[in-house]
Amino acid sequence: MAGEPLVVDGRTLDLQVQAFAAAASKRSGGVDSTPRGMRKAFAELVATAGGNPVDQVAIHDRTIDGPSGDLAVRLYHPSTASGEAPAIVWFHQGGGVIGDLDTDHSFCTVLAEECAAVVISVDYRLAPEHSFPAGIDDAISSFQWVVDNADGLGIDPSSVAVGGTSTGATFAAVVCQERRRRSAPQPVVQILVYGDFDGTSTGGSRQTCGDCFPLTSATMAFFADHYLPDRSAINDPRVSPGTESELWGLAPAVVITAGFDPLRDAGDDYAEALRSAGVDTVHRCEDSLPHSFTVMGGISREAREAIGRLSADVSRLIN
Image (cartoon, rainbow, N blue to C red; front, side, top):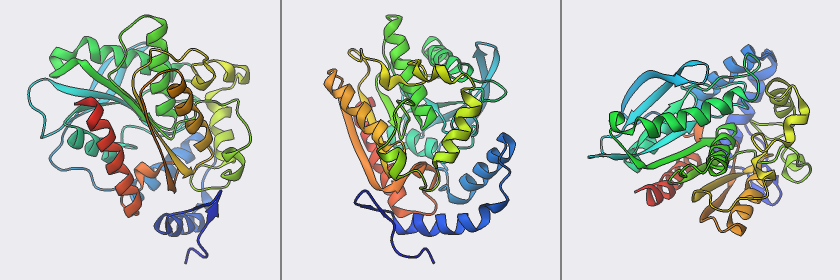
């Protein structure tokens, strides 16, 4: 049993997620707190909680040219696309330390099919093997590669979006900011799902949700120790894009936060900052769900419905 409903900041956690979290907590005592151990544990969570991929989406793995050699990507071709399709360059979650192409796999099939878009998921480099800024360099480079190779990919170069979950959302925000600094065309939309846009912030949801499943304060500290060994870099807008004062001219945004997430306030604040800068912004907090809810479609009806709402938001903007 999950016990009494969990209420934080006036929100009540989805009971199916709460039951899953309670069961996961009983099994977590033996997790190896190293990058290898955390990667294994997260892969098991995704395999257990993730929903089934959409069968009719065609999937193809390949490599592209990255800033330091070959970079693995996974392409998702929807059955609903015709002619030159829109595209979404996608970056998975994992704090810059864990996660891979399988992490957001099922979600990417949903996004591809519902949006009639080719999704290109990027296996960017991870810390501690490759600490900041390796991962963000891969993100910036891979987005440009997709634009440059649009004809060969069967996509419309003027309709390429960028997005991600958690750290991947942070990367997507940075891609937009860096392209504006370089006077490069913006993505058609930026899809920012429970990202951390200001690592300098304290208090608020970082405290009230600091013990919430699956992202805790201790887990965030673990990620920071490996991804950002030079802590002074936390002020770099490539790490904390929410600290950037000039946000005008960025791509339209879909910003989705989660009620039981220490990063909730950072996402809410970034959505408001984008709006204040004149950026068209769709913003919603999925109040009853936690961080990483997009990999919980297999165990939570509310998570599946939230994934559907997100896909509909993106479809309206990308098509």
